[in-house]
Length: 150
Image (tube, rainbow, N blue to C red; front, side):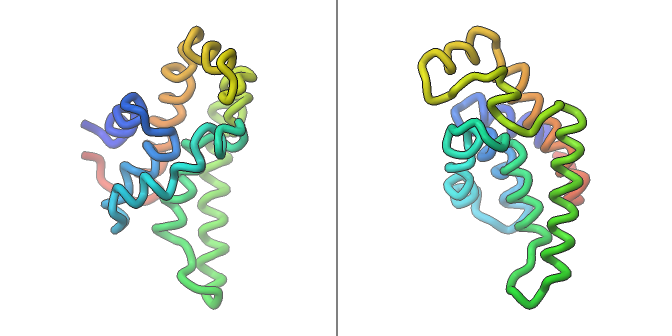
């Protein structure tokens, strides 16, 4: 099973987009998967179900930061390098999907309301949008993080 397939399986079982994307890279990056899952919880649904930045992107930024981020304030070069890597990732995803905002990607659905969740279900947006974003993010990150496919 590829990492993208693993991430989609996690999402299908109830993990958020951020948990699915970050989670499949956790062990490769030296982080316990349960800790990664917990750490990325609040990023789901566009950050706390607010419909802001897509969780697949947030999970990807966490993975890029864990791999390349600066371990202290002194290493400004690593910080700027990580910013550049995150910017390239986000730009690639925006170019492919037209937006990086969860609510926009989900056709205006408010995930805090019953109506919004019903809209997502009725139009299969989880399958058409979320899983597509997850797969694309994971595929991009496998290359960017130089992690071999399973």
